[in-house]
Image (cartoon, rainbow, N blue to C red; front, side, top):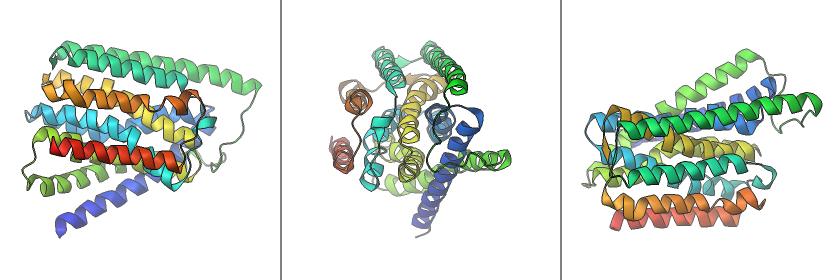
Length: 316
């Protein structure tokens, strides 16, 4: 009973921290003149990817590379299908108003690079350096976009973001960000630790745990943040959070973990899981390029696809 209570506590912390992070990130974007999308691709994405980083590094140190790789691949699949699917069922994500084409293309490029390195058989120290160099280039692109936006803002001020408070004091913004960034990994850690105890009783392998339970658990921060963003009608934060988190997972999480130790790639990843991850990323094409909103029907289809994927992994 205590294990289930602690898992519930972790979930509550995640939801509260996700709300705090969205508030802080959106209001920070207003105060410094940076669009909420860019803030969600950086601050929010870094905060919600913290659990993946901690778990992947620990997995490599504990000689469980399958858990580290499964965590990232499974999380990226969950981020698209579940993290965007469930919130859309609650409230339509008006992604037609968001311009995420550039960052989405970068995410696809990161996916192709990641898969290419995976086919070398092992993520080595050199692989880690390549992934981190790509991440640095991505952050440079974001910094340049932010500068361009600031110049345009002075000439053509954009409309106020719905639900945000442009007069929120700096100390309150900082408190929201700290609570969100600290609470998300804490809640995920409590939830994953106790959920793992339950799952291990069934004798599930490290790779399967990474692809399912741990991936789902480490995607809960993204889910909590996206649910709050959807309810607040901030689709740019929701979509930007998913794209940014997926980029960080592929380039930053495995990049850092590969510096800690080699990560051999199981054949199952090469024949199935990596391609499911890429297919899930391509599902976003109509929402990014053709201005389609993620409505309740789409949300149900995405969520159902994720459930189907989990069933296949468990019975494979």
